[in-house]
Amino acid sequence: MDFSNEDFFKGIVLFGLNAATYKMGLAQTLIKASRNQQNEIQWGDLSEHYFDVYLNRLSSNPMPQQGNPNRLTKMERIVKEHQLGVLSRIEAIQKVGDTAFDDVVPRFQTIGTDKRIVANHFYEIDTGKRLILKDSLLDLNVNQLDMLDDEITARWGLLEGAFSINQTDFKLANDIREIYLKDGYKRKTLTNNIPFLSGYQGNTCFYCAEQMGSDIHVDHVLPRQVVNHDEIWNLVLAHSDCNLLKSDRLVGEHFIRKLIARNENIMGSNHPWKAQIQLSLGSTPKRRASGLRHHYDNVKTVLGRYYWGGADSYNPEADPFYRRLITVLNNR
Image 1 (tube, rainbow, N blue to C red):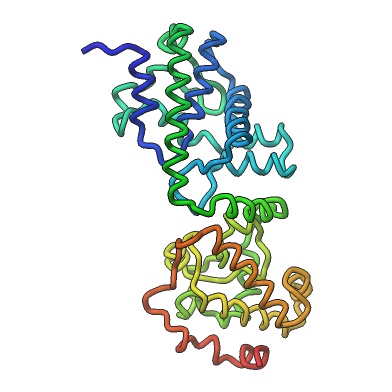
Image 2: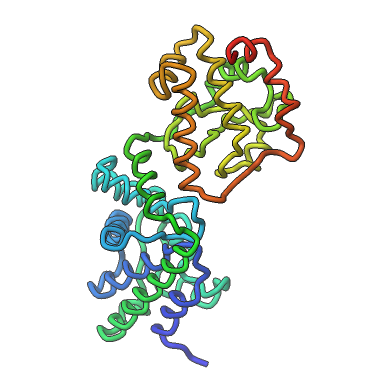
């Protein structure tokens, strides 16, 4: 059976496997290019048009853009950073071009999981440089484009509604995320903190309490994708397997108690980092514990039930960290 170009485009929009709304954003961008009869879209123009589609969408209708309730999509994050003044318009568009197209541009032309049905049907990719648009897209008439625009808008709203079911505190969680986005900064290299953290942690993995070997990761106890910083009070050493198991999930209360104790170990030393912890969390042990728990409660609101209690073998009561001299002395 022969299908029209309109049928194929509808198939992409209506029958894609959408864990996020990226396809809807790109579909609207392509429709605009077709209206303008562009034979190709330079990467910078693609980034700008795509950014504007999301900026307009999220400014008028700030709904969740993916199924995972615990993360922001790249586009949500870029738009929010722009709205908060963290990124200028030029910086935001550049970030879209650098980071947002890795999945959606090569995967857009699929129906379901089958890449063969519409492979390269509407455009070819010159990665990082341009999209070369084909007659199959440019020959769509105004009525067809209007109808497809309506289909995209309806499908986008349907996805947002489905995603919002899992995010009952979406508005509150968004407000909290904005606090950390506004005060956050780009990820730094963390490996230079390993020697410093090792002593205050007793050279054991923070999550399983077993000895560290050469496979050492620096991990954010409260996930960086929420707190958006690399401050030392939130960094610990972990085995790669433990780090992978934890991922971006919320840790159990016992790990927060341990993190408070670890931070007091640092405060009991003469290391310059103690001044930064004091500035971030408070001038007394009570205030520092309260400050850290405040961040924990914020992250708990954002992540909800996305919870991890630790490696199966971990027993807080048997953790040797608590029996070390430095911990006993600094946490009396």
